[in-house]
Amino acid sequence: MSSPSNTSDASWTPAVPRFIYWKFASRAQTPMLLLHAAGIPYDWDDATANAWPASKSSAPFGQLPILVDDGYTIAQSGTITRYCAKLGCLWPQNPAGWLKVDMLIEHCNDIYRMMEKAKYAGDDEAQWQAWQSFAKDKYPEKVAWIASMLGDNEWFGGEKMNAADVVVFSIFNLVERSGADCPLSNWPTLLEHSKRVAQVGTISQYLSANHPVYFKVPAWTAEQGTVV
Image (cartoon, rainbow, N blue to C red; front, side, top):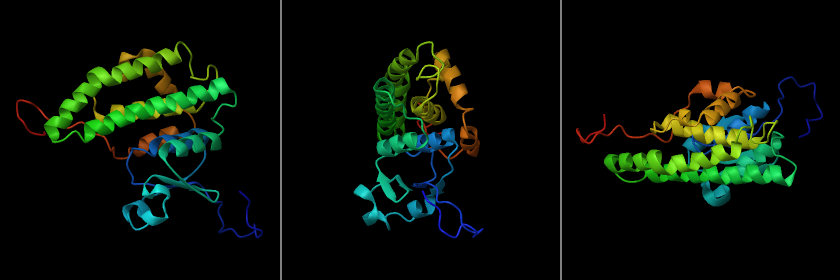
């Protein structure tokens, strides 16, 4: 992006990517973390999101999140994720590398959609039951494939970190914060991997903000029949 001709104007600041989304740790978390990993600042425009659907007609496909950057208005969370990965130079250039990143993006999207199904399974008891199925059966199977892909490497790219590491870290973080009973400590190599990713760039700043979570397992108990 180019600066204005009058660069002596101290009030001018370069435009930064702007996310339009509600302030929850949810769909926009992964692309935001990619920018944190690359040290790229951004704006989080929750005011426009909170006024939704006032601006719905101007949004591609009429949905959020949206990323506005360099004259582009970008929709679809997967597209936004890939854009931020490339913006932060975290997208591999060789086919074997970027194909692995792309596959892991879709694999983690599968996990996200499973959490959506649990969240909207019905009343609190139905949600609780769905989360139990997620934690005991569905999620561990998905994580096992991720662990296999990482192997004994420190990073999914081998010796160098790339977007795949952040994408996987993000979905693990959302699951952990949901309260699902399936700790990452069940996979020691992935736990150590997540600890490494948490120290990259300014990711720790995002984590310390402790944004409210979108997914949360209801504290329902069969004995009480209520949420506690």
